Length: 404
Image 1 (cartoon, rainbow, N blue to C red):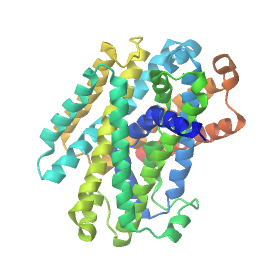
Image 2: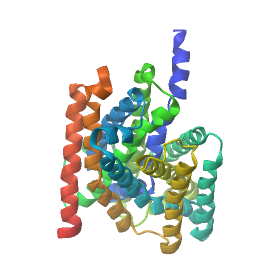
Image 3: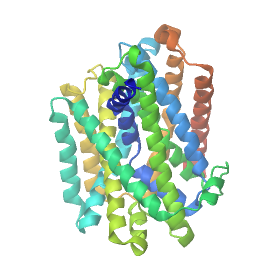
Image 4: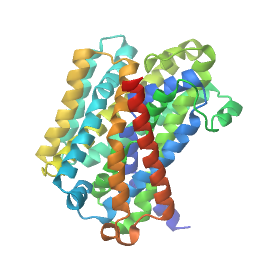
């Protein structure tokens, strides 16, 4: 028993990479999609969230194990196995995925303050973007990033737990939502939901995070478990949003046209305090994804172009800043993004991720890379299911967006 507190402290200190992944995956687009799904379809699609969380945990664990056993980056492994073009295309694809969400992240963070103080989003967008860029100039960017992400995840958890408690969900209907079914007309939103919670880009970056943390093969069990804990937190936060919307908005027939509508809908029942708490959660989701997505995009495109992957290097910082500035520019030029555009951005990125997922799965089964830590049968079963889901949704999404 004497070792238990020490083990708990070690586990808590190791949580950084997993919570960073959770924080960067869950952004304002995720918040909007979960609110929309709960408002329109009630609890009917809760089972999808459970499934995608399990698949995300599978690929995050695979990526973490690759990072732990390898002395080079995951993109370098891609380069070694499939050539430079594969590494560059993967890095550029991830850069595109992260950059496409950046305007929504920036606007979401701005809206949280603008709506609370009844002001324009413009000054908040500028201030928040400058704050994000300023984090790059701390001596140890990873440690700062880790602390910021843990704070944002804690903020989201507190905010949305409070919201769920106030919502008082119907547990009989909630349980029924775990039975698989696809309501008519929900397919495009389901695709967006999968893209929000099953992020191959986020899972891919877990290999980089465990290396930045300094983990090695001796930390295998602890590192993998903390990664799974972080993704479980992501699933819980997403579930709380969907459940709250199903409990509050769905019975009233309120359709979400923006993420903040959920907060506004709570005002008649719980006053301005609940709305303020919701806005804090929106800021946490937006700012964590703003910084996290930029970090992923900047780091991976730098590594793909052989410019290094150290978060404290000048090329990596410059490219992270570029992603932040892209989001700022789009946010200032176009203002609020409509829900349809957020859903479109979430869905369109799913085309690139199956190929990245195939690469992760192949490397996790490569004994020359993994040694005794290659995938077990259950890893491969879930991995193949994940790839089939992504490929099916990519085809379905293409048809829904361009052919129907």
